[in-house]
Image 1 (cartoon, rainbow, N blue to C red):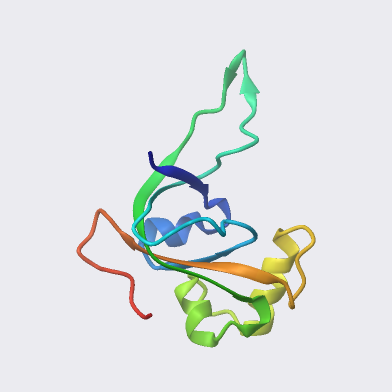
Image 2: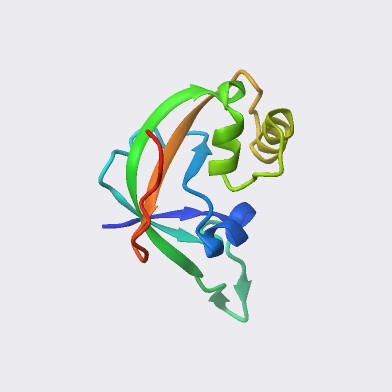
Length: 126
């Protein structure tokens, strides 16, 4: 079964297929070859008139690499792969920590690299 992953903070990058890497707190059990369905929002979808807010699927991907590293070890090339070519490393680290409770620049995060299943373009790098 495909796992769902929320990408609400980077939905435009998903639509443009410019993001090939993500960093997450947790997700340590993910393995290469697994498939993910990237969605606007997964948890916390509000109820409207008795029904739950619909699940908006954006794209399916296949994981090609998973590893752990300190957040502040990210490189400028990796910030670009995250979908933020205009952002500096310190700005990305601040953005990430600001959107992940309990995260610090020294936190160990899971780096997940994927390829999009609806294009011929595979994720570059490692």
